[in-house]
Image (cartoon, rainbow, N blue to C red; front, top):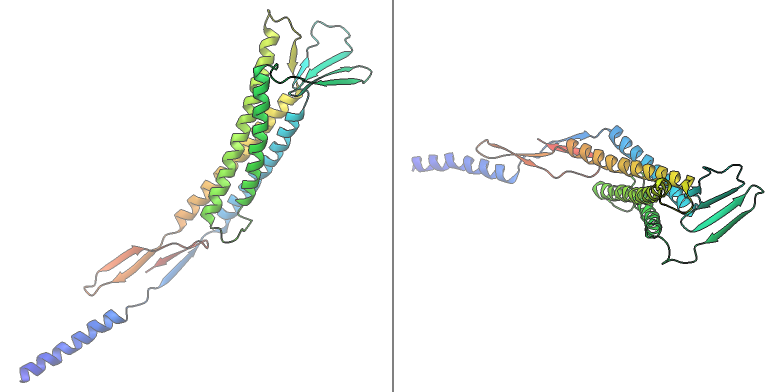
Length: 265
C-alpha cells in the first residue's frame, strides 16, 4: 500500500506538470523591425518622375499626330524660291513668301500610300495606349490611396502602366521611323520622278515623344521592382515554439502589409 501511494504521489505532479504545459503555453515574444522609409520615398519619386515623363510624351505625341510638317519640300536646286510645300498625315499645305497658306486634306483613304495609312493607325493607337497608361499609372502611385488596396496590387498596377507607356513609345517610334525611311528613300532614288522632300519637324517631335515614353515607362517598371525587392528582403518572420522534449521549432509567420516585418522568438 505504501508503495502504491508513493507511486501515485510521484505520478500526480508529473501529470499536473504535463497538463499545465499543454494548457498554458508560453506566449511568443514579438520583435518588430521597421522598414526604412527612404526606399519607399525613392520608389514613389521614380513613379512620379515616370508619370511626368509619360504626360509630356503624350502631349508631344498628340502634337506630332496633328502636325502637318512631317516632310518639307526640298529646296535643293532652286534659286530664290518663295514657295514652300509640306505634308503631314492628314493634309498637304503650300505657303508663299507673302504669308498665305493653303492646305488641302487628303480626299481619299484607299488611294493613299500603304505606309501613310499604317502610320496613321500607329499614331492613333499610340495615343489611345498612352492615355490608358496615364490613368493606370495614376491609380498605381504609392502616394494615392484607393480603398484597401495592398502594396503588391498597387505595384502591379504601376508596372502595367509602365509597360503601356513603353508600348506607346514603340508605336510612335515605329510610325515616325517608317515614314522617315520612305522620305529618305525617295530623296536618294535617282529613278523617282516626283517632288523630293526632306524630314520635317513633326518627325523629330515623334522621336522625342517616343524616347520620353520609353524612359518614363522604364522608370515606372524599375520603381516597382525596387519596391518589391526591398519589401521582400526586409520581411523576415519566424514563429518559435518548444515541445516537451525541449526541441525548438521555427515556423515562417505570415508577413504584414503595413511596411514592417515581425519576427517571433
